[in-house]
Length: 146
Image (cartoon, rainbow, N blue to C red):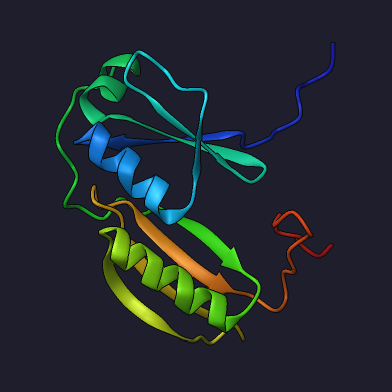
């Protein structure tokens, strides 16, 4: 028996208002797929998928006591990599128009790229970045160098 390959396939975000979160992620341009009748919103996000699920239900499913953490920084950020600085600016503007809170406007950064940050309506932090050292494939997948 061989060990399974480690692959990040789905990120589930705990949310306070499922319908608001579904509308937000659709407005960002993520395509909703696999519509569920049990209160989950699934979105294709390149090689990975994102789901939104009520926070209290996620905690219950994982057998964790629930405490609303929406206003707190969780020590995690999701990333949306773009092909250019112009795309980063457009993505951050799109997020703002969809209801995001801009945490940090995009700017040139110490590692040679360009990035900014926003919070989704539930306080999940997103970085939007152009990284000239990590090119994107034709289908948008990040290509890490060896």
